[in-house]
Image (cartoon, rainbow over the protein chains, first blue to last red):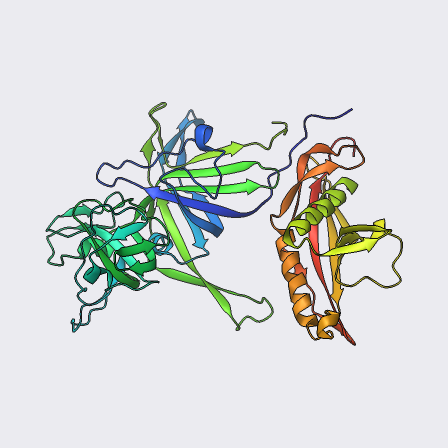
Length: 324
Length: 161
């Protein structure tokens, strides 16, 4: 007789995958993940606005909430428990170096190394940048139309940042991703493009503009946004800004079962740190992979279901045909 | 466990026909994809060149689980002398090509478990899954290059197995 159910042992997974999404810092509003509606998503095509950070390793969740008993009677014995503090840490290692993984693995703001202007004075986080250019109307997320003289300033393979000029704003800067917090007005007109996450590599350059290798995360350039080339990234140990993102981790079991860890608000809690892993376990001093280490502090949200303050949601979607 | 072995073999065979449809073997009068299970064929006096041979080796089980998990080691053997048109001087390239085909066949690292004793094959409830292959060094025997890759294939025992 054919069976229709099986007893599923503990899930077996290869590695964890991670997705991050912006938190509205001013309103402290995270990106929501609903496992009932979105739990079956294709890992290669996550629901918007989640951004894939690929495979991660050594994912470790550490609950640090403390409970204490309320004692009654003589001799005193626990009568009830109360939760005194609510805290959790998450640590992991990113297996790739990208704008977002670097930003998440640093305890401060993460900056774009803008292409310098000719003769600019050297600076540790990049010399004064070459002037930004204005995209023409009709530009899209993957195609930036430019005047021919502006297009000639870019080369295939370059990376471009697309965002607005800095005009003296203070507070959290960057939309929808807050990339920095400015306490007093600065003088660098390119500051927002230094900290923006709205980047894409250039695949082709023509006299009419740039074709991008991947869509700009922010979509088609909006009015007021300008384009600037960048050479790489730079971050610092120190500063007062903490990255904060919504995070989603998936352990996909061998039987198509899924474990999700959804952290509505994660703040980076350590400075930039790397770890090395020898490619050949028998040759510890040979070639080694350099991975980004990250550690986060989970911040609470209030669950509208019942008003409880929580820092993480763990969801389990059992394997098809598995007994529960 | 036989269902897991069959499912693993059929998955790799199906993938090979997509990766390199020209890798075939004429065996018992039929042209088949160039991947065979050694224990399911007549004994070979000498392993054929330019095809993949699956050889099942060690078996381990973990019975302290809700469903018993079986771990079976599968050795994928392959060898080549290169092509006649190049006088065998391309044997290194031919072996590299087979290395790449092993990597391509192995991924994704799972396949549904089917019972191939039924016609048509009956889908079972669980998936067969495996880890990355461990490639052994090349063995040189005169003009022949051979290599093996070892994969541990895991599966859960279902009712009736």
